[in-house]
Image 1 (cartoon, rainbow, N blue to C red):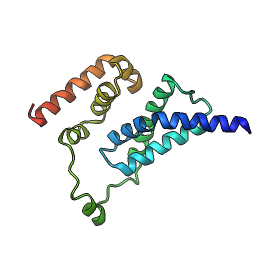
Image 2 (cartoon, rainbow, N blue to C red; image 1 turned 180 degrees about the vertical axis):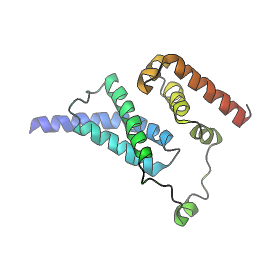
Image 3 (cartoon, helix red, strand yellow; image 1 turned 90 degrees about the horizontal axis):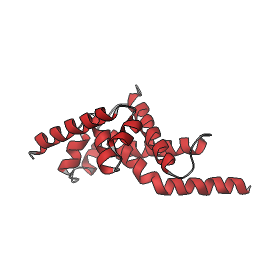
Image 4 (cartoon, rainbow, N blue to C red; image 1 turned 45 degrees about the vertical axis):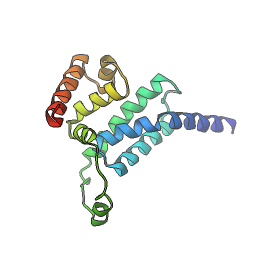
Length: 158
């Protein structure tokens, strides 16, 4: 019985420390759709809770959660039944909400550029670490960031 309590409190520590980061990654993947981002983030932590090989608290946990979040989001986006439906009530509710111009521009970037920018500039990963997390080469990460900055500069008039 004590083992179960230890596992849950260990999970609580991981959840408390990393939920915001996982949610932000999912938010970026879903272009600001909060409900989808919340669903994906919860799925990531369910996988962590159910995984036999999930790492304990530490840097490996962070990397495991980032890769799992990316995979969960990609899977959710690939679903054939997923369709964006506009609801009148949702449209009215969001009518007064204003997006920040930069965040809106970042959300319109292609997936790889968006993730490279987020992991490198926001989470503070080096290009080499970002490459490992994204499953590509370090120079590819530099290319993604360069293209993203160029697009953002053009779009935002900088």
